[in-house]
Image (cartoon, rainbow, N blue to C red; front, side, top):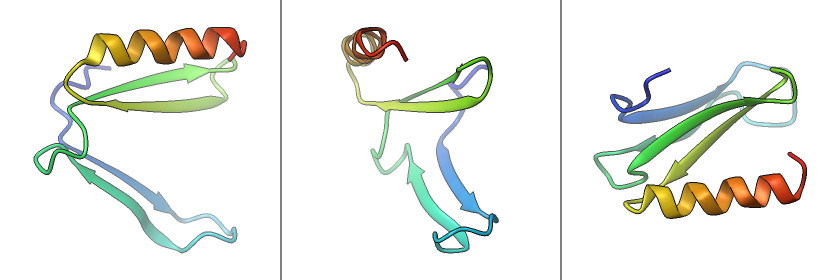
Length: 73
């Protein structure tokens, strides 16, 4: 998926759990909440991870991926 056009990230809870119902997180690129967004499916497609980073995308992503590899995630 090309994430370059994404300018807003929302997490909306419609599940029956102990979290608030409805929008629980909204972040905007225009408000500098993030500069880059990467999405990764892990654990055989069972886990969706969203990585938000700032201007220096490569530095952040390389460090994050290194940390994940060390933890076998």
